[in-house]
Length: 428
Ligand code: AMP
Ligand code: GLY
Image (tube, rainbow, N blue to C red; front, side, top):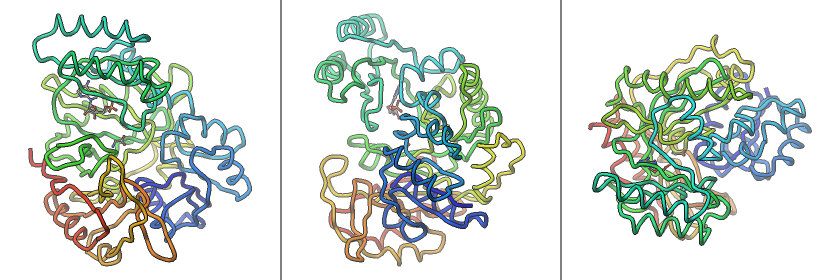
């Protein structure tokens, strides 16, 4: 089978790494890929958002399966375009991908399906938003905050958790008046603020059958103990020891299944990876968000735990035969730690040579996935904010973290920063 993976981050390296292990794969391409993916696949210089260019490449190169990593091409309709040309591709089509592309659509699906989620209001003008906020801050219990979300893609930054009316006002001003997220600020969703630990639940679905992947937990803040600004994710572990089998099933039954059925009833079945961001509140699991793809860095933690071949899972999704696909997991746990460029999530330099990659990968039970890396004159250099995802496996989260951090000691580049507490919340 000839396979193309679309994307260039740690998630895509993990997907490519897992796909490369399948005996069914005879040729593997990545567009555009990174220095790590270049070691196991052929890099093609086409950006993920150039969906026409990708389709032309797939036709010309007899690609039998395309797997899309990031959300932007899915939301732009890469799946509809490929299917229109008779090409097979893993991911939801444009209409259901709105579950991530529009916060308002996601909330609509949640409300229609009875999925537990924060109360919300969609506001189309700053004055409506201000009136909502005034009402909220006058009538809610003291200290009950709000969350303001730009209604579109904002590179993971369009969500502001606000405790005071002043914070809320400046978020409205920034999003709706100053348009710091562009058109995503034309509408905002104002939500009640929920509290509790967060977990990530990823599944693969063909629109009927749901195959849950192991639950995981992301670490969004840049510094240890969840301090500092939000990032694209600084590390993840899996599974989540404090999430019982009963609660996991409750998440599937009350959040994932209703979303998949509602989307099917709206017309176009959801086929692909579906990611639910969950908050475990005192009233049970609530859905914070849906993503139309695998999570990053969750994928770098979850895929190394997958024992079975990934190709039947991907093809079963396209063929609507997931009910016949058996999925096996390794025992134990995994921890993935992100090495980021100095200054990230703010401004950072690129082009720093990276050393110790081979030694790091040589630590038993460890894999180094590349995110923002490049090959410059035969030397691997930094090329992004998040640079590497170092994943360790162990008999439990603590052992897996020890492995990941042992591996990380070998990696050096100027300005390197990583959290030292990935996995520590597993013992909650
Ligand atoms: P989202 O992009 O919707 O996942 O939001 C990003 C982050 O904002 C989440 O991971 C939460 O930490 C936080 N967040 C979003 N919605 C809420 C909410 N209703 N209550 C509390 N925190 C939230
Ligand atoms: N880890 C969060 C995300 O992939 O959106």
